[in-house]
Length: 75
Image 1: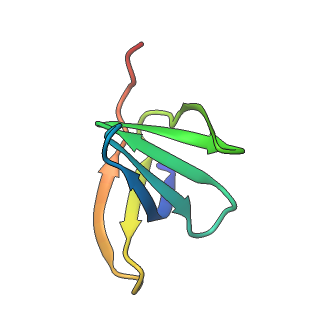
Image 2: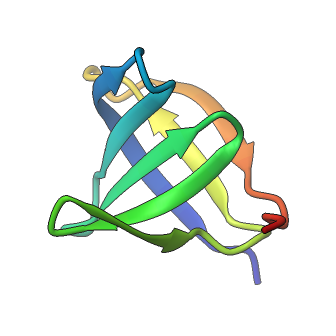
């Protein structure tokens, strides 16, 4: 079964190439750095989002902007 995460962008750190997102249905946060997705707990990066997860990026009006599927993250 494919897992889906629905997120909305909260802010960007362009100096570090990072974009932060908040889950729409769970009290979780995520950050995307280049093409890798990470979970964030208490403001700190916790770990990679596992491969094969579909991340739906939603705008403030509830419209889907894009869908990304996470890939295997190499160390």
